[in-house]
Image (cartoon, rainbow, N blue to C red; front, side):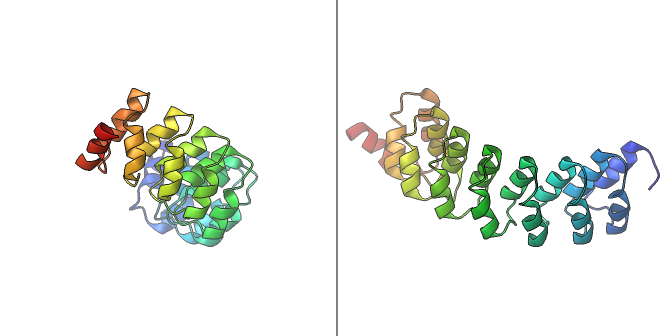
Length: 210
């Protein structure tokens, strides 16, 4: 496709661009244009399949993160040599459950962190990730709306303030965890718990009494 780089980029990024034009742009020599096509939710599945085999990992990562990427493509990219590509799959809401379970055991923390952030990651997987050695992974679990209450209670006592702060901001945090966090030694944690929509008058009363 002709035109300047700027024109090609604008077309590649535009969700209203026709599938035929996106199909042509998928073969662009510029990696940034191909990345933009790979991210576009209007890009046809056959084009995404082609880009999933691109020589540049940035393009494959963009496909992995595309919300319209079909499950079969995500299964393929879950085996990619690049941890950043696998992280894209782990964070994709369309990723099949068996893929999310597998990536939860990935050797690279960036992959596990992405899975811990995904709201479609099953509770049992989040329970496993809550014990991860990397605090950033635990912090993502602490902020995930799908994390079970008992796991949030445990993370409310994490040694890392950032993890406790994530629990404090989670609307699903149980009342007893919020009571604990409202007394936290770190001001930012207490402030997050104070602003939590689940921090009711009853919770405040418990802080005062207990």
